[in-house]
Structures are given as structure tokens and as C-alpha cells.
Length: 83
Image (cartoon, rainbow, N blue to C red; front, top):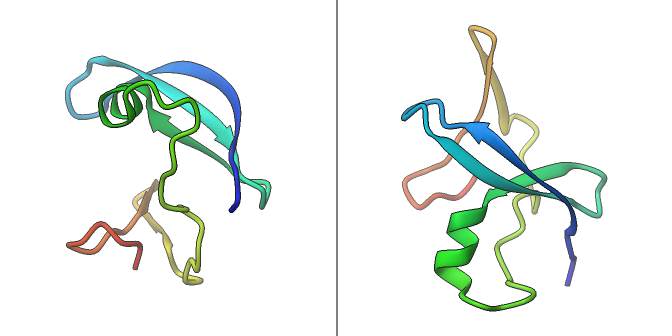
């Protein structure tokens, strides 16, 4: 099983609500960094020290990252799978 290494916790502004959100940043074995909403981890994994989540970078198609009008997004299908 691949493991993301904890790097830091940062506070960002939610683009929809304008509220502040704590995000945990992890380093993926492929070298990429990714973030997860800290409250999501707290609410879904309780006191688990090492929660297991789906690998965001598993089998990414070449066109997974889209650039539209200067914004970067990852498209998700209706089941929240990368497409």
C-alpha cells in the first residue's frame, strides 16, 4: 500500500463560501503534493492515526487535468471517480 507523508497543515479560503478551511498537505510517493480537508478526515475517520483513503493519482488518464480560462480543475464523474 502506498502512503502519503504528512507535510503540513495550512489554512485556505474556500472559493465557494469564503470561509477559512484547514487543509492537511501530504506528499505522494510519485512526488506530487495533495491536500485533504482536515474536518473531512476528523469527521470520517474519528481517532484513526493512519486513515486509508483512495489513491488520487491511481491510473490517472493523461487528460485528467483540465485548464479552462486560467483555472485548473480535476474532472470527477458522477461517482466521484477521476475521468
